[in-house]
Amino acid sequence: MPMPTGKKQQRFEIAEFGLLLLALLVWLWEWRLGGGYLITTLLLWGAVGLSFFNRLAQQKQQRRQTLGMLRGLEQRIQAQFKDALEPLEAKIRQATEHRSHPKQVETEEELQTYLHSFETALTQVVQYLNQAALDERLTNLEQAFLAQHQEPATQRSAPGLAVGADLEAIADPWETIFPTAASPEPPPKQQWQLLRTLAAHKDCVSALAFSHDQRFLASGGWDHQLKLWQVEDGKQISQVTAHDQGILNLKFIPLEDSAQGLAIASSGFSSEIKLWQLDLQRSIPQLELQQTLEGHLGAVYALAVTVNKRLISGSHDQTLRQWQLQDGRLSQETLDLNDQIQAIALAPQENLFISGGTEGVLKFWRTPDHHLLGSLKNDPAETIQAIAIRADGKLFASGGDQGLIHLWQLDLNTLATLPETVPCFTLKAHDKPITKLLFSGQGNFLFSGSADSTIKVWQLGIPEPLTTLYFSEADHSNHQRLLSLALSADGRTLAAGGSDGSIKLWRQI
Image (tube, rainbow, N blue to C red):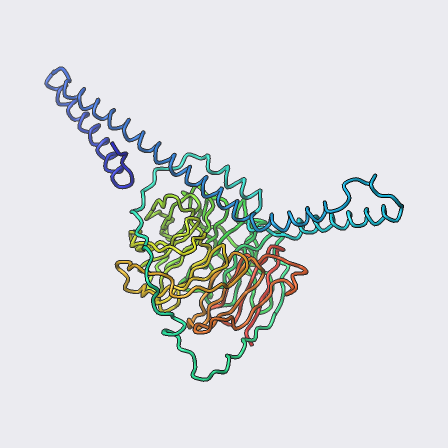
């Protein structure tokens, strides 16, 4: 007999409670009549049997969830270290392409040459180990793995997926939605000026966000620090140790009077979400903790905030949760088995949101009740690390660990049933995983950031980037991975954070 899950399991638990209540009432009735308590005994045995059945169902679901998390973690480790191991193996092979033993050296000059070349090769290996900044550190991976031993709470199972089969390609949005000018002349390059570089954190800068009024920039790093900066002059105005592990995401929460203060939600490798507030009227503004939202069992990679002050969170524990920010109450909880969630994007009308993760499937959820409308899969399959929706809700982009950008043409504003479709265009955008995708406010430009240390600006309608910004030197002499990216509301100020702890600010000129 199949085990109950989700709402069905909740009904069994309610039935168990009902049997116990009924047994109590019947016992009182039989006690007053002085009977033999036969009916009470039968009801109690029924309640015990139902309780035993429920416990078996919960244990089975917990085992499935734990195995799913372990498989996802294993795949993530393999993907993250694959690119790093190949050049390291090349360095080691180079270091061993010398004479196998100094005894084979015949003269002092040959010995000096042998020692110098061997030292040079070993130095190159050490330099590579020092300079190669990986997407995840072993420490954080270990902590994330250890966090999985906690007993997961009973979750609601997600509805079945509806992934389309092989389909005919649909119209290319570069040709149909954004027709290029009749002139054959190439478009002018965008000009971006580097404003400043901030020595911001002692470890990777993994989260950035501009305030709605564009005056402030929030940054979070693997050094556990949450910092707030003035965009105009780069001055730091507040700092707090926000989490006991690295920070992964930051979102500004809209307030009725933004002139009085700021509100920020933060999440990280630790499972809790924290809400912070800053009083700008104070002489020395301090970030103060307002609430801690607890419930996730793994790292919280994705956050989205609605205009009516609801927060949607996605975690490596394979759950999506929705919170009421006024009181911190959990209003929705959905289990997405076999998918450790990496990214969430909220549609402009907020009627739905899209999630993606290690399963490599884009899933469409109705915002009020987390009802699954359907799902789409990339080809080739890859972990989805970034999702962006254009302001009109009719085009969205997804990117993953293979450096590809997929463009999808769907009207999300009125979407009630997901049609079968495929990406209408795919760009080979970067050489390494994409870490962030952002549409400009007007929707004319798409910004992509990658671990290859580049930011590319795409004009919709042109298959080549308008410009490429380098977080590190273009010749890769000082390679640092780009891990976070943020764009101001007017689309003219860009912030990027890297593995060396610095933040770079550009402005379009």
